[in-house]
Image (cartoon, rainbow, N blue to C red; front, side, top):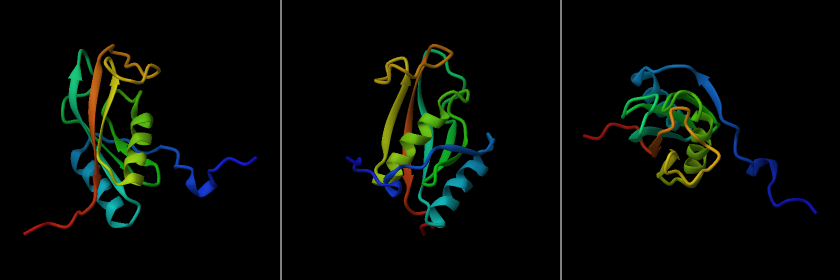
Length: 130
């Protein structure tokens, strides 16, 4: 028996598009993804429990094709975060994600031993409002 998923239903695999910590590059990457029809999400580090590799407010942008840029940890969780953002984009629903200490994911631990909470915001409109 075939499974119920076709190739078209398979979410894209996360892949780093380019390495950057530049906030303008990250936001522009998210905006460009939304404008060109790929869909995108902006991921923001909003809580740290214990130690963390990045400061509050660190961001990454994820596009619906699986490509991403930016960092919200030391590079060890970005692919997992991108996979969650891709799911949020496909459902057009914002969400929160906890990783490390206090997380529901027992197989994702942070090297620093702490925990982080991320806000995943699906970018819906990049036009300025007046």
